[in-house]
Image 1 (cartoon, rainbow, N blue to C red):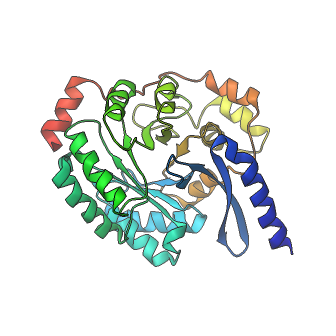
Image 2: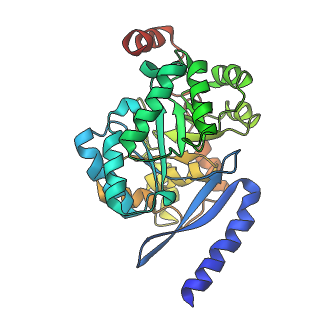
Image 3: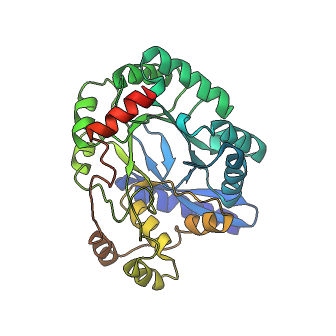
Length: 317
């Protein structure tokens, strides 16, 4: 009876939240632990979790263990990339977990060395093999340079053929995104960017809204030029009201903006803490206070710097 009532509760709050493109769904991580996960709906109707687990800079050897731990905690979205070299670890972990494939959301990205229609198409098939799956839930262009239009044509074809459920881009700043989206048949459904309380990506939001493209945050707790989030006195003070840590407040702030977050940790205790953000809600005043922490809208890595682009193309192009 309690089980039935809880399901009805989830259905009701899900219906109420759909007006904001955010839907509540129920995930049963294990028999004794019922969790509520918030999802976001993409332009094609595909729903993806607002919180996932990222494996950037997780070694191939460690990846299988880390993803297995994350799945045990309750994560159902795993974000990897061809360039990370650990897609096979993700594939082994989800296969061994026993979790039905339809309950998972697997994300990967096409790297610059695989840019262009023919090479990208072959790399997509290779990612499918390494992930040990018949389809990828979300496929992104990893960097905004190289033959991105050729890559996109391959991704559109994979999408239409059912190999991919949703497609998008990563590290496309406002001007580059606007130009790219203007010339594509299928508009990017996601733009994955460095985004956190110190890098809030406010300026690009009006550009993304034109195509209803959602933001996905890499580095949601810092990293690559960003320090101090988990030590923030403001976040800690806000967290005290809810018995939450600064990191949990930072993640909650993102998902309440409708931004997908993919925190990474190799420690299961930290994975659990990062996942435990669906039982409280920040107030409007909390959100406004956190907004004052912004230091850079576009991120601390200047991905439009010609020297950075030259490095990417000469090294990987």
